[in-house]
Length: 153
Ligand code: CDP
Ligand code: MG
Image 1 (cartoon, rainbow, N blue to C red):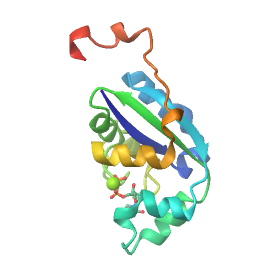
Image 2 (image 1 turned 60 degrees about the horizontal axis):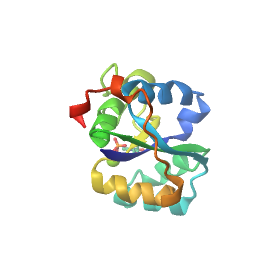
Image 3 (image 1 turned 90 degrees about the vertical axis):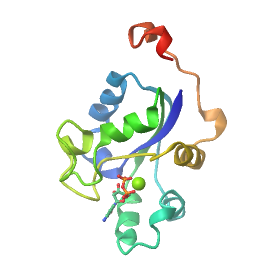
């Protein structure tokens, strides 16, 4: 079982797409174990996007990601890190395949609606940036036996 961090970015919140995006993760069989609305500060943005801080386009990314509230969530599921990345699609909404979240809802390289951790190490680091350990709850819905066979987990 893996956990991964998602952010519904400011464009997603402003465009009132949170419900539709959350629905997709629920329908897939992923479980939310934490969720909160917050405003990202420039300091948190630099920590979150540490690998991109030196890039020429970072200032506009920081302006975007701090420009309105985001919804941060932790999703749990089998192979959750890769499953979520695949559901998001390529970084640019113009390149992301139809059927993916970015492919269906985004026409932008920057305003691509949702962040998902890109590996298990990144997931652990990013979950720690947004949530205290006690903010994560146990959440195994009773319908789980109808989501996958018992020997798959
Ligand atoms: O989010 P993902 O891992 O797919 O992409 P990334 O290459 O790690 O870039 C992080 C985020 O920076 C993207 O999701 C975009 O919102 C933004 N970005 C940007 O503003 N301009 C670029 N040229 C590339 C990415
Ligand atoms: Mg990335």
